[in-house]
Image (cartoon, rainbow, N blue to C red):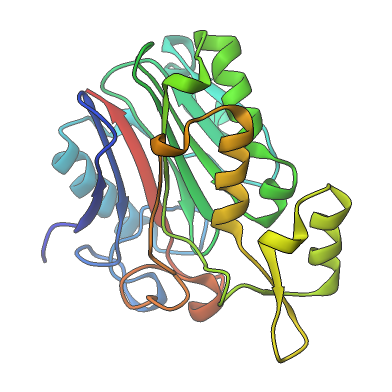
Length: 257
């Protein structure tokens, strides 16, 4: 069994940022091979062994690898020493985590949704955000920037952002109700959506979240966007639309060293 293969991101000195791939690990079938999400139906033993491998690779203990139980809303948890003493209850129903504690890896799970990482180089604080279409409509990324400003005195100009692997415009076909949800929240539909020859609308989720970062004041030069489309590259990255909801999840994490 090989160790997990990670996609690393260059976000600055003193921080490790990455997304997991499907390679390396103990999960099988649609969960194979590398999945650390305990909420998607994978075996407890496989998840535990995969977590152990990731912690060894990162050089941290298991209790310093934090993954919330996401619910597609906009609740966020501030990971401090108090939370670390009772993480299970504190991570329930959270779709974003932030911390300034070194040696703690925070992250989110996705399989077509958009993961976003933030790093405040000035105040040494990080954030991991799960932005599915519902969270994107509710502008979770913009809210996370605001929350970091409130908690850590973060200035948007000091933030560096990585938008991780997710479903692309070409692959994200949506119903009229999803299109209307974005339109009703004053998203610029002429730039974030396109109607294809099938008559169906498509939404550009990575662009939606990049626009939120720009609107929050994050410089364009500080924003990187993964070229990976999970739907098209489901052999390397998990995609719920291709593999079904009972499949593994990508973990996109960030660790202050």
